[in-house]
Image: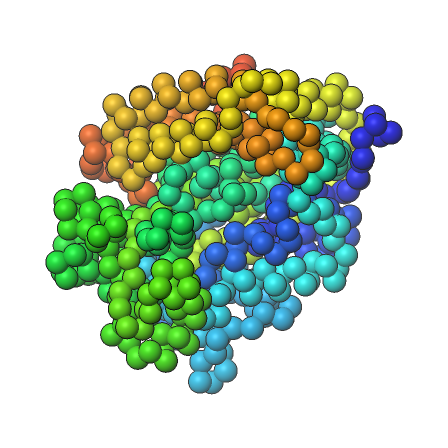
Length: 572
C-alpha cells in the first residue's frame, strides 16, 4: 500500500486551515503531537478572513458591566435556546482568555484611549463586545495563527482535497485525498482527525462563500458514520452586495451597522422600525435578513432587488478609518463612495449553524478519534448565530479539539488501514473520467444552486421542500453520470464532480431537517408554520446514515443546570 501511494503519518491530522484548524494545530503541537494540516486552498486564504467585524468576548473594556453571563445569555437567546448550553457556557467563559492569548502571539487590535482592546457593538449583543482591527479582524487572526503554527513546526499540505476518511474498525485511521495540481492520490495515516472545513454556501446561488465551501467536512463525517445536527438552520447574512452581478453575494460586514449604518427602502423609509423597533439595525441577523427580503417582496426594494445601507451621515474620515475594507470594496467593485451615498445590499447565504454533532468538552464526534470545530461543528449557535461569535467559536473549540485529539492520540496504537478502502476511494475519484459523454458537472451544480435558492431559502413551505427533495433525487442520479474530459492535471471540472457529492449530501440533510421542523425559529422560517412551537423548542434534529440512506430523528435538547437557568431568567 505504502509503495503505491504517497503516504504521510501524523498523530493528529487536521483538515482545514482556517481559524479552527490552525488553533487546533497549535493546541495539539502544545501537547507534543506530530501534526499535519491539509487545506483545499492556499494557507492564509481561509474563510476566517471574511469575518471582518470582530471577535465576540466579554472583556468589559468599553462596557464595564459586561461579563460571561451576559454573553452566555445573549448567545442562548440569539440561538432561540436550541444551543447546547454547555458549549454556550464554555464559549462565553473562555473567549476573553483566547483573545489575550492571540494578543500574546502578536495580534494587533484597535485600542481604547487607555490602551486596552477596543470593542464595538454588534447585532444581538447587549454590550459593546467585539474586539476588532478596523474591519479586517479575521485577516489579523489568520495571520497571527499562521505565524504561530509555522513557528511551532506544523506540517502543511496545501491545495490538497480530502475525499474520504479512512477507518480501522469503528475508529478513524486517517484520510485519502488528492493533490489538486497534479491529480496524484495521497494517503494520510493518523490516530486522530480534526475536521475544520467550514460551511456549505456553494450549494446556494447567492452566497458570501467562495469555491471551497462545499460541505466537505460534514459529508466526510457523515460517510464515516458520524451524526449531523440541526442542519435546517442556514444563516442568510442580511447584507451582501447585490450589484454589479459579478460581485453578487460578496459580504458587507455587520460592522457597517455596528458603526451606525442605517437601512432604508426605495421610499427612503427606515424600515427596521416595523420589524424590531427596539434594536433597529442591530437586531439579530435572521430578523434583519427577513426584513430586507420582505421589503423587496412587497415592492419596496432597491433597483436591483435589495435595500439601501447608508453610513454617509458619519464623517468621511471616520468611515475610512473604521471601515477601510468596505470603503475600498464598494469604490473598486461597484463605483460607489460609501462616505457620500448608500450601498445596495441584500441577504446572502453566509453560515450554517448545523453540522457535525460533537461533545462540548472535547469536540469529539460520535466516531472515536474524529473531532470537529468551527462552522463544520454544531451546537454552540442553536437556531441562529450572533455576529462575532464565529471567531471566538474557532478559538475556544479549535483549542479544545486540538488538545483532545492529541490526548486521544497518546492513548491509542497506530491504526491499520486495509488496502481495499483506499482502492475503493480511488475508484470513486476516477469514475467521472469513465463517463465519456456524461453531463457537465457545472450544469448539475447550477441547477442544484437554483433549486436550493428558490425552494430551501430564507422562507420555506412544505410544498417547496417536498419538491426540493424530488429535485435532489434527480440531481443525485445526474451526478453519478457526470463526465469529465482531459487528464487529472489542473482539472477544475473533476474537482467539481467530487464536490457535487458533498453538496448533494448536505443539501438533502438541510432539506429533510427543514421539512421536519414545523415551526419558525431563528434562521429557519416556515411560511406555513410562522410561530414558535413549544415541542420543537425542546428538540434537535439528528441526521445519520442508516444502510446507505439518510435517516432523521429527534432528540431532546440537553437539560440545563439550575444556576444557568437563573442567568437566562435574569432581565437584561
